[in-house]
Length: 457
Image (tube, rainbow, N blue to C red; front, side, top):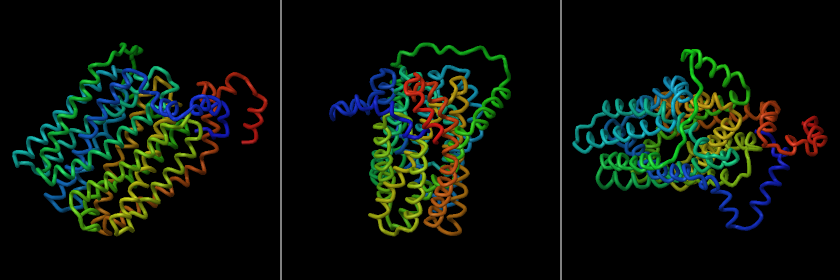
């Protein structure tokens, strides 16, 4: 989160890697794939995420087709994500206690079974909204454990801490490449054979990530013996995460964006059908446009040399997301809406991935599972309340106006974060020095100049 003006060492390191040519530049952007376990995970998870996005689009369209209710779209979103909000803090304690690798294998198998259950109900023609609600809640329960375990496991797959930020950026690239491909496939499949085959394809896609996990060579994780009660460890995690201003500020901004901004995805079927007068294909195009922007944002982050300057990036990205949503809410033309979804997708992805990177960089290792559980709450756990709020608000003022209101809230959050940024940088700087991210200070080289710069800031 430190300013890029602190990054003379960063530039010195990056110049050797970036200045040789395009091939060297590409290898630098993909450097985390040099770690075998991460490469396996990246491949398997990438295929599985395409199935996940197919299911997300199919679920939204199925609920809209069955109910034609904006409020019900919000209820379904709430049911699928509220278990994450309620259980993620406790799951974070378990992630710090248990073997994260084994947790991931179990959660992926359970998620596969959930998708096959949806497929069976849809293909036999007996599916009802309450089935979607129940199975969505089950998936939310799985995600409460899976997401913090997956986030915390990244550092175990990437042996070199210097490659952590690149691995997180590549994760985001993978998610958003899937977001680009999945909705397009979903739109075609829904129009051709219905939602059931989308759910079935998702179930099959889980075999890829399960296979990649089983193929890994993972050393048993050494975990200290735990004699304290879960509530004590949970309270310890809360005190650490929300008592340290940089982590607290990043989490609160992410929670605001997720609560007020992200529910636009829940309302997208209404925008596609009523505002833009389209169908499932239009919905697929809109979500794919979001994926294009998000993928561009991920490529930008993958090319960054270090975490320095990410605080300012978070402010700009959040503002971009907010502006994109406001303009999207006002748009009535498909071509303009697609362009604005590219802008919004890039803004949200950069904000989310930058927040992840900053937190993963400064968190203490023994707190990683619990803090990433709070990250999960901020990113995914607040979304169900946003879905309910958006559904209720859209029923009164319409989906376009609701999306624009959410964008305005994101802009306000970006402004508040920007005002706190100088103070946050001062608190983060000693951690960056200790961990070698400001090597000219850590090594004592040019210390007088560094101290002078610090005094001036």
